[in-house]
Length: 326
Image (cartoon, rainbow, N blue to C red; front, side, top):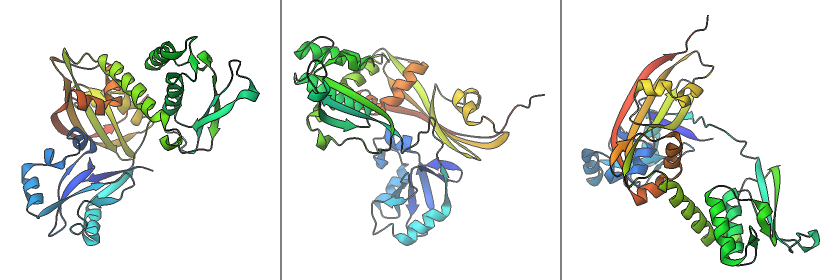
């Protein structure tokens, strides 16, 4: 299970440790590191960068399993790792829509004749990753081995691309191909691209095209969108989510995510780290729920295309008490 590290009640992912006494001097969240493309020289303070450069301090990070890692193992030795561990605590991350990791759908793609006759079927690939299934389909349709939507060749390819972008792929539109779906199979690993090499290029093409289509909905050439990444720690767990605008306590408490997190809880200490960002060009706006979901799903693509600018960070601490019903 994933673990979230805390230093002085603040959730963090990476930090700087003093090599002489093992004191943690500065920490930062995963979101801060991600916004800087994981170049620690871009998000640590100048004094810390100077200390790292002259050998007084060293950079370290925490894996999701709770393991402490350092780039320079000759500097961050086992004794120093022990000192780091004494200063931090861990809590299991609470995830929305948690799924049984051993349970997944399995998709089997087969080639067949025009009538999908059982005796003509030949298995091409098996996967638990739905997007990978679409990539396998895309590879076969683009190569002309399968038809889609009553078309063949390039027309079939364009028809499939359109349906994929609109999340309307229909297996019944396939000809010379057949997809079987089985639920709750005990398979944990999706198919490797090495097992279906022609799907690799198709995977990149269809997902890249979909990303561009989704990002276009944000209209970032004429507006910029302001949002916050909120990391919340309570007495019983941790959750990270996005909210529109620059989040304050009132916005946090009234959000659906926070209310869901605190559901059935009488009260708890709440410590929240808030990191606010802006993406796009033009007048600043708050993203809609749909736009916020696009930002969440395509952060890497947005960073590459527009750059994500950090605006500010804040720390909110309070005691939450549920309203009593009389």
